[in-house]
Amino acid sequence: MLKLLPFHRVSTQEQARQNGEGLDRQRYSTRMIALANGAELLPAIEVADVSGSDVDKTPEWAQALRILADPDTHLAVDAIDRLLRADAFNFRVMRDLLETGTKIYTPGKVVDLTSPEDGFMAGLFALLGGREKAEIKKRIQAGREAARR
Image 1 (cartoon, rainbow, N blue to C red):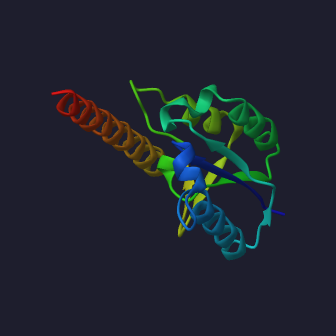
Image 2 (image 1 turned 90 degrees about the vertical axis):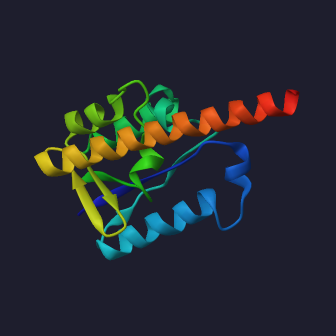
């Protein structure tokens, strides 16, 4: 039987506390993914206050990889950017998933990284997420500089 490991991530503690947003929305989404795919939903792994470009450095990611060693277990995420944002071309999370043969279940799509099309699109989304993160940092820095003036 297909088993899905929900992986939820928010970048800040504030996002983790928001009702209806952040973790609550991701929890709902991964439950719906499991229902839509007739899968057993495993206990979720949740990461708060961690950037998408640093997921691979967390103990939670190491725990997820141990669970994903089971070939019947795959990952459920609300969106690819909850899993990773390629920063400085860090694709370690994608490599880890390729090595375990893990598919990524998202709302309405199953991403198979061994497929050239899915691998390309996941990499592209990761790069776009990394670019978005860089832009956010730039705007925050500009706001801080403006506040100092």
